[in-house]
Image (cartoon, rainbow, N blue to C red):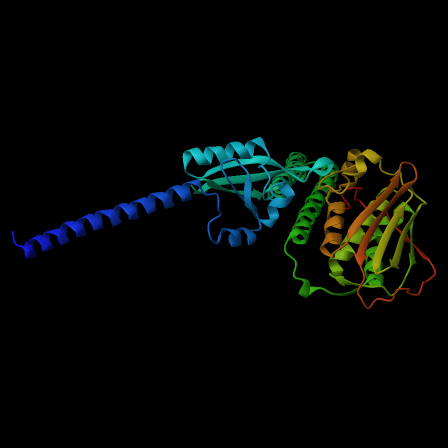
Length: 401
């Protein structure tokens, strides 16, 4: 072998050895990098930005269940950077996701807040591994959604139950009229009762539709200036004829010239419901007062009666749908149990609320509070009280027709 061939052979062998060495170095660097990744608890690039943009509570935890990154919404749940993940259920879920290497989802109760102000919230928790030593946990609070869904189910069930009574009565009365066709007196009696049940059914359907409209989405651009004087006057006029026989007087007093923003028809119905309740619970010769006040930009429309009052134990439920504080009276008057619920939602629809003061044997005062139009005067002129006879309405407290 001459020197040239020897040089070439040495070059080939050297190159091969060099290539092997480079390959080994590259493999070693890759293994080292993989080991560093597996051992790292550093949050991946972009994860922090994603967490900051989340509305849900979300955290990234390491194998020791210590929070290494968190969204702003996670703080109220006691999950902040550097703290251990709270709650046995959450920890178990994260461990399950780490072992299974696929997303784990669970419905659970989580604590929001700390100490005596902590509250239990219903939430869906989802855990998924995003790195060998990091797990992402997302908590979505569904308490309000479940509450609304439960309200919807209750409303449907209660409405179905309430509809059965007048529908069943109408069917029975129709059969009775058919059977008593040869007895004019019986036919007249049954026909009168049939008309009453039909009226009750129609009132219930109208109330359900009204409540449904109030609970639907509202477009503020449709609001108009509403004169409170006109709302009160129309509500009084609507109940004057039927209630006159009861001997109940309506006294209108308070501020005049007050204006709010909203829907005049909705507010008139709400005030009418309060009047109907007050009249229905007032004895003959009693006075039902309707007063309007505006203080610090808040308009108060108060309806006061001197009826039997509402027991304190029932006051918290008086605005519930279909709730009746006096079931016997409700059956006699044909109330629907939706009136005060409509009042509550009408007030909320206008950015206000409704308050109740009541004491047994001393009567009740229902007050609707609404924000005044910004241009409304702070001290409107007052007008001397005027009394007008009204009649007893056929609607019960807790239902306002």
